[in-house]
Length: 493
Ligand SMILES: Cc1cc2nc3c(=O)[nH]c(=O)nc-3n(C[C@H](O)[C@H](O)[C@H](O)COP(=O)(O)OP(=O)(O)OC[C@H]3O[C@@H](n4cnc5c(N)ncnc54)[C@H](O)[C@@H]3O)c2cc1C
Image (cartoon, rainbow, N blue to C red; front, top):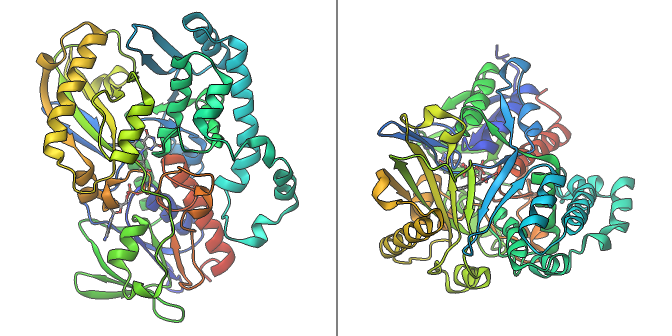
């Protein structure tokens, strides 16, 4: 029940971070309204059905599930399965490597299928764990922009260990020194794509992602990824959060002393606190009134986007697991194309996610729902119709070659999502899926903070601000903002 004395918070966007921050604010006593332009919650983390197939639209890989569970009442904690094999990797030479979550099994598989040793993998994962221990309290679960919080004894001790995390070397160089087999280097280089970055430019600290998958584990909600959104919305509603769907915010009026007002359907709504869960570039370029008073955003280039084919397949493929990667012959060519030529190479790495492997309800009997994705550059006006056609043909040829089974002829339903489509649906500029890329060692410091002094009472969450994109980091941004609001605004009283 709402109390009359409660202060009110307006949240723009019901993406995963908007939902999480709504729960955190409502729990600490705020009266919360969430405005979402789409007809349902989730943003990039969404779903749709087509001809009896159900598809998750965006994220498919889920790590750090405790960040979800800590938001939920006990009875809402949906079953989440730990994966035995995180990803099945297919190479052009016919080798298939199962990346077992268990470090020992993964290392044994690498040793059996490549020229790299078990101990090289275990050493790498141990180092990844160390980097996580040193960096996560500072860079993931903390606002980098509150000196008081940064200058703690614990963080100073961590700072002394910074040389050990090799922030100054690049990720590919690091992986090439840890492994000798090009297939294994490529496998570990791939972790840079988890935040839309280029392994040949991103810092070696991204090694930490291997720790999330192989030491801490990858997970899958039994009803598919959209179950995460459903349960967060349910929790928020239980806390009396009001959702307004199909309700775009048209303008944000905010300033040093000024109001915190949202223009919605031509009407003003005043709040004590605002939280933006929309792409930060879109916030300044489109939503914030009089935003010319702020300096141009200093951020790295946009992260990669994606070209996704959702295919209903009339056959089942026993060679496939839940997450499958079909590697390109040359990662260097692929990333030069993505980040320099801003196009997709003619041999892209292909990711195939088949949720019906674990949730049979996602496809009709005897069939499978394929989410087939290649990395794509953010939209700068490329001819996407041509690119879509070319890439579709290349993907089908590659999958048929490596699976030794027809693919094209088995597609019975199809939908496509490209970078302009991602921008249209979620307002992420250029369709970049992780905000800015992490293609330099300073990227972490250049991400937009979760607040700014010139806009008191306005906070920022989501994949385009600190600490970054991907479900766990979006949930972390909501946690940071929950703490900041508690500190700066003193709860609701
Ligand atoms: C294809 C794809 C694959 C991905 N794979 C993974 C993965 O495997 N694992 C992983 O962890 N992450 C993955 N991600 C990234 C992850 O989906 C995002 O980082 C995360 O979902 C972003 O959440 P968010 O809260 O920042 O905002 P978004 O999901 O971008 O939501 C923002 C919301 O704001 C709304 N909005 C925009 N403008 C307005 C307005 N004016 N008024 C009202 N509402 C507005 C939008 O409609 C949207 O609902 C993937 C993303 C994509 C697209």
